[in-house]
Image (cartoon, each protein chain N blue to C red):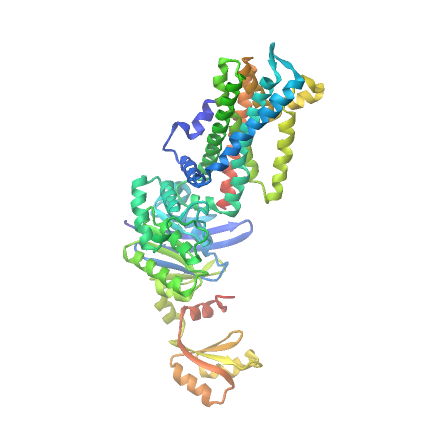
Length: 309
Length: 265
């Protein structure tokens, strides 16, 4: 396809007086894995719903697959796959029937759906559960089934809203692996997440959203290079320490210092050296840890808050 | 009536609302036995009220035709069965799927639209209601309660009753906030059930009340079915039919709009 997969200019979503998405611009190219990173309430889901043509925009321009969701909703939805934040599998049907009927919603012939469903259950490792009802499946299995369901129409564009929220580590890694394979097969992935590691693992490019706006854009690496030092020293404070007072003491060790509830982050290009200085200075810390800077730090520096806030 | 047929997907098999019908067939395939109650219930009614009570009541005059009480009450029960059959899937079951199972959130992520959902669920309710009504008509046939060739139109008549109530039921359900609100459905249905000239003729009511009953929805269906089955044809039957069709169409329109507002904010 020529031109961008999705293009938004001044895209806005209002619910009454509340502004959920406040005039954002972005452009997603075919084959890209693109992420919306941000805390709950930042406007990620509203954006995804507008892209998926299940929520009309309040303002701005939006083109999905070169079409306007206002006029061509059904046609766009026919070519897009959706993995919603909350599973909405059909609980009255079996695993297999969930795929069958979903294919029918896309008006596919039954024989074609049977072939695809067999392949997809294989792909998400649920072949042995095909006759099971949905309810007894684990969270990770339901998520995988939802992904299989979203692929039944062979979408060019896959929208994933917090695909691994609430899953245990093994389930997440299995899911990431499947999404990575999809990306390799040429499907454009658009996902929202508030997990840094997920964004770093999966996204070629991402935007950071906060308070309904985009505050930064780039590849995970570029965002870190542009906004943060190379390394971070995490100084965990003694239980009775006052973070504000300790921050003042730690300021001279790094380029930048951020106080969290129970620890202070010192941003520096040489973590080991800084950690050594902190220790030799006789600073009273419960522990000192050196790590590489992450997207979490980018977010903290850009918004002054952690993603869990 | 023509516009009804155009809106219902009967004549356009590839039309998207049929997918909802397919979905319901898949869902009910495993619990097909719950349909039995729909067939058996009206039969029990016919036996107890028609035969039991009928013995005490004697014959009644319908437009110059003297008929046994059972023959009088059977078309009323048919209309009630058509109403009940269509309300089951468009009120309670629809509410659960919309509010709790989030079934339609998944459906609306596909090319299907809120209007397809509304039309599909109504179509399903009509098919289910038509099956019950057909079984009931066969029972009436066996008892000798179909007195006229016009009885052939009793099944389409029952589908029309179903359409009216399915539309209104679906629309009303989109306004419900919790299961408590379903008490309103019962509050509306019980008086309709008892006082729509179902069990005794309209002339038994005081004049003022007669005027009220004439405007209630189930009354339209009862008169329609009774006239067809007994062969008491008159042009006002078209008005009754138009009333039911309008109720269904308005309900469908409101429901489609509301589903869009609720699920695609």
